[in-house]
Length: 270
Length: 270
Image 1 (cartoon, rainbow over the protein chains, first blue to last red):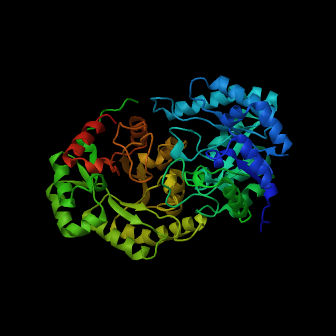
Image 2 (image 1 turned 135 degrees about the vertical axis):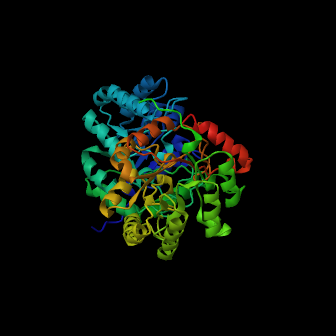
Image 3 (image 1 turned 45 degrees about the vertical axis):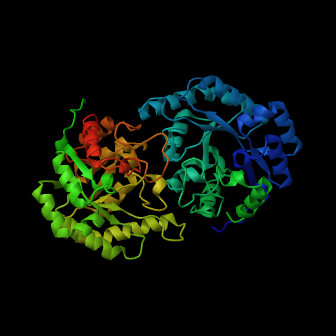
């Protein structure tokens, strides 16, 4: 089906995109100035500004919080307290979800099945508290190249299998960068449906990619067929924001007002 | 089940591991000197030495050819002639399989489903000729981080779906580096079984990984649970060689005799 070009009223800015240049207060003001509908702040920047101040400033500018980044890391010591704080912060901010980067192998471990079992246990442990706080948990499957050090959930299918086991109040964040390569992507997005699709993140995959973490591309500069992906996501019932999240040494060097202007322009073609 | 430590009689050396230091003649002699059972040469090095000479030298040293690297790249112009030549060379060398790196997106394309369809058509086209030549074709699923530029078959499941469609004479090369992260790996190795498991490649995944192509690790230096993986592969009926393939700017700087000695030592613990 032909898609309508999306407007800035569908745009959310993930704070990581300009985090090296701007504080959270500046990001909030920038989003409002450029007509973005939403924002997805990172917890360290929320803490630096103060949770109550962040909430007040976001509300004052009429922004939606499309997600809070992030909880997870269930294979690291201290995960329980950290996730409890994350749920509380997401609740205060009225975030549409708490994004979970689930964690990779424990320090010194090669036992991936064990890491995955610990992630499952961690999710089961925090889910009742998240439900009570009214905070949907969004498992973000990360690219397999980040399986060891950041997240051992690397496909949408695996994330949705976990969701099915765990029940209500949990779903997925579909990030184009992490999942675009997956031959089962369309099928699994359809399986996820409206109830499990909690967030949609976009950027692009550059060829060549020079760094495993911080060389993501601006939409249109890479090889991801973003209009097709959006068609799948919206065809499955997702009606939320398109959150732009670009970790990039290149874009972190640019004037953030330019970055936001380019995002708006490129987003209209995705 | 507990595994017996493998001896050098199970070892094959993929020529890429020391290709920057040694010619094919030197690699063949090195393999023999260090007691490796097999070799997997690359076609450019075979061409440089001459096909007949390569065959004679390999035979003279009593080495098995665990695979020929490589055919594939079905999304590039000229793929048909190139694959026909590769089949012929594999036949002359008596290679146990022709390894296929299937190719990624065509130049300027973002259409991954189309690339995958072209790969399927290319495989169907060359398979009868490979069967006639007695050369098993081994699809090597590459890591998803290489989907755009090298191979758009990125999971064992996807590769085996293609094999099931195509019938006899085709299987998979399981390379630990490319598939170690896959949550369905054990299941799909079992599904592949003896008939589809044509090659087993090993090296290690380093944390951090500094380059998407040439930062593979020596066995034991990274996070892949190689003994567990070997247990799965051999449990599924694979009785072939363990082919060490390390693309690494680091190991390419080392004395190749040292590299082979270290491979032997590390292999005994995998």
